[in-house]
Each structure stands twice: as C-alpha cells, then as structure tokens.
Amino acid sequence: MEVPVEELKKEFQIGIIGFGDMGRLYAERFSQAGWIVNVCDRKENFETVKERCEGTNINALQDGFEVSRKSDYILYSVESEYLDRIVGMYGPATKVGSIVGGQSSCKSPEIRAFEKYLPKDVEIISCHSMHGPRVNPQSQPLVIIRHRAKDRSFEIVKEILSCLQSSVVFLTAEEHDRITADTQAVTHAAFLAMGMAWRANNQYPWDINRWCGGIENIKMNLSMRIYSSKWHVYAGLAILNPDARKQIKQYATSVTELFKLAISGKAQEFENRVRNAGKFVFGEENNGASSGLLLSDELLDQYSISNVPNDKSVGNSHLSILAIVDSWWKLGIHPQKHMICSTPLFRLWVGVSEYVFCNPDLLTSCIYTATKHNEFCPDDLEFVLSARSWSEHVEQGDFENYKKQFVKIQDYFRPRFEEATKVGNAMIKKLLENLKRTA
Image (cartoon, rainbow, N blue to C red; front, side, top):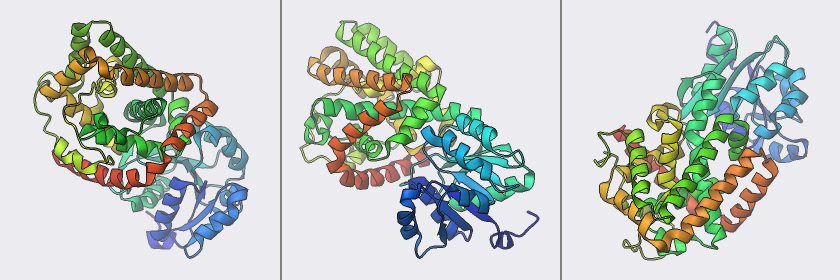
C-alpha cells in the first residue's frame, strides 16, 4: 500500500453499525489489531454498548449517523430482514469517499441496498465470515466481495480483515449466495426439523436410548447449537436467498418422498433411490467402501450429553441424512466442491453423510430400519411434518412465524444449552481437526 499500515492505523477509522454477536467479534478483533473502531447499536442499547466498550479501544457512538460520518470503512452488521431500511436511514450520511460493506449471509439484497442508498462516491467491499460468533475465525472461510472499489481501497480492506486470520475466498455477490445456499440451507433445515420433531414428541433425545452414541451425538449437539443461536441468523439466509428457498423445499420433498416409499411397502424402490443418491454424491468408486474419514462411534461417544446407557441394538433410519444426500442428488449438488467456503456445521454434515453412505453395514441398517422397522415410523413421521413446516415458512417469506416457531422450540431446549455448547464446541474442534487431516 502507498501508506504504511501502522501510519494508516493512526487516522483510518472503522465503523460497525450493529453491535450484536458478530459485530462485537469483528470490533474486538479490529481493535486488538490496532485499528480505531467506532460502533453503535439501537439507541435504546447505547448505555449497554458503552459499558461493554469500557476498558477497550472501541468507541461507542449514539447511532449510525455518527458512525457513518466519522468512519472510513463502515460495516453493516444487522439482521438481514432490516438491512434495506437501516441502510436507507444511515447510507446517505456516509462519509465522502469512504468504503462500505456488510456481514449479512445473503449478499444480493445487501448489494442492492448499497447501490440504492449510498452516494455514488462511496466504494463497496463486502464480506461474510462463514461461521458463527462462537467459532474462532482463524483458518475459517472468509468471503470478500469487491463490488465497486479502487485498488488501494481493496488493499486496505484486505489488510483490515487479515487480523481475523481466516482463509480468504474472493467471490461475486451472486456466486456467494449460490454457494452459501449449497452449504448452509439444507444443513440448517435438517437440524431445525430435528429439534421441532423432538419437541412435538415431548422428547429430550439425550434421555432416550435410541438417540445415544455415535452419529446421534452429532445430531443432538449441532441441533442444540443452532437453537441456542439467534433466529434471524437462519431466517435471513433461508428466506432472502432464492437458491436457499429452492433447496429447503427440495429437502422437505426428499424427506416426504422417502418416507412414503418406506411406509408403503416399496422397500426396493426406497433402497434403489438411496443408493443412487449416494453414488451421485460420493462417487461410484466410494459406494460401499471406507470413507477414509476419522469418524467412529468410539470417537463420537466422547461427546455425549446423554445420561442414559448406550444401547447399540437400537436401530435408526437416519432419515435426515438419507434425505440430505437425496436432495443433493436431485439438485445436482456435489458438496465436496464447496468445502473451501463452507461452515463448520456443513463440513461435519458432509463427513457424517459420507460416513453413513460409505459404511455398507450402517447404510443397510438404515434402509432396513426405514422400510421394515415400524417402531421408528412415528419419529420419522414427526420429522417429515417438521421439515415441511419449516419449508412452508420459508416459501411464504414469513419472518414472524419463522421467529415464533424457532423461539418456541428454543425455549423448550434452553435448560441444556450451556452443557451442549461446551460439549459441542469440543466435538466440533476435534472432528474438524480429523476432517482437515483427511482432506
């Protein structure tokens, strides 16, 4: 860069509008790297934000007008549902010649809002960390979108974001939204449906032996991880991204069609469909062979939040996993192609899916349980209803009912969030290390 970084840090100011979990993570990282950081949140939260910033180099300002007038690089870290309105409010006040970006998970509407409300002399460079606020950003994918910017501004933004120590991927807004849908939409739908089905059955899965051990620990921990987060993180991606809507609808369709085949005596048709999906997603040469991933029941048993004995004799159709591979097949998605900008949850879900489909005995057991073991049908039925319910909310673009449904389930599981988060963090760290070694 023309100006040495240390000299630039003395005068260049970063502004963050929205001091939620991700806004706070970015603010703290930028401040620790020596940048001047200005932040704001809703006006009623000013005193809280000010208190959180005490003892740091982060400046708490009254509102987005102050942040926009003072800052040279401004990041909007707000809920996707309200982004257009908030950019419309503060965008016209943006400092002359500054750079603006956002952290939302759906970039096309974000870019449209910037183009609509920002002065023409403002440059646009956006970003998206492909992980949640509780994950260390080091080595995690970070997407940077250069939409409208000079070379010098682009270099400055890359330097600012380098303090996150993430693995940077450069995409357009359209490429980002397509890949984000491929790597997040169906994954989130699966775990949301699990939680809803357990609540509908008035079940805490860790108290029932059919959900103990191995893969079940991943299902429980990751489902609890999603429900312990904020609803809008998932609603924005699902509802505002057209590709995500299509994929969530396909997932609900795959779940429904597989279940109908299973209960209507069409066992051979069910098996053929499942195995064909596995061949498409994981390759002909891998079907029925070892996946090479270091996932095992012995490893996953270490990360249980269950207090009941592990009964290995209890079968499970793993309909959620069979359907996710089926939906990838129907959508023509090869998930391995998107690993470079995928979330930790997605990488684990791909690993688990491959583990099931490339383990001949386990896959055969899933098919047998789904088609011959009537005891598990009531649980699968609730899962079908749950997957369809989430899909309908997304299809209708219904933020309010999405929120109501999410919060109701969240409240049901809340007592176990603290324990599940600790166990889940340890599990994710270990499993991602294993997946990385086998990549």
